[in-house]
Length: 330
Ligand code: UDP
Image: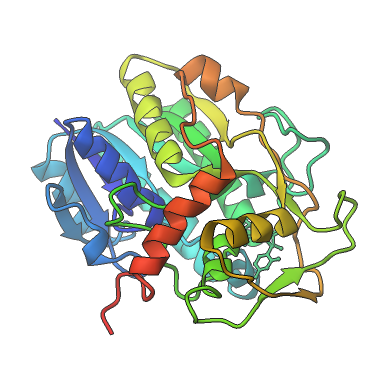
């Protein structure tokens, strides 16, 4: 039987496929290649270029392939864009998931692990954040992910589907082989933007706000390596395959780093001075996001392997240094 990975040509999806294949699993990928890259598709995976909103295409895949469970990454994920184009997020993330679940229910495929986000919490009531804490997203991206979680809950209630939602904190880093890594266009994430400076693609890094209520005034985030996230998806799928109930897990290292600390660490890793400049706060950014991942560790047996920021940034630097234009040929 195969694992169906939706969005398997994207950043976290492609890393999960690499781990699945290393673990000896058969993988089928569906990706519309709007933000994913063909070059990120593992050569041993079966690939369909299709859109999860296309019911006919999804029905054909479920009919043809013997799918034991689905891992769902196929979604838009840019916070800023979600604020200026909310309907794009409702269409791709919510409508897309609705069509997917219709097709899964029709074909008796009843296990799904999917990407949720720390953005479901909004401004946290405390850190570290527990899964049971208040969810009040401050951006449309987080809102659609929270709505996806709720859609799964009601479909589970009516049709017996079982799901695990994984709420990621700040995904970063790249695969140990150096073959795949982070490549967004446009890039909005802190670590790849910082690394554009030593790569000669940017003069300096803008620090969005230095007047937050944090020790150095810059925002604190919990940075978690993409391979550790990938492992959590496999553990979550196996949990469902063994009969586990619906569940939601945070995935982070449980340690926060400020923007300034991340820039400093990147200076150390790259040996480049990386100039920084203060800029206004970015709308919707909470001061601190730090995960409690105790539940994932206890219930899934998850243990992040990359718990040191310097190692995480070193894997990202190896990828960006050797692939300054990501997967695109120039
Ligand atoms: N950030 C920054 N400069 C940048 C990009 C991001 O200061 O050019 C900050 C951002 O305000 C946030 C942190 O870095 O506090 C992480 O941002 P990112 O977009 O990587 O992830 P997010 O926390 O939004 O998921």
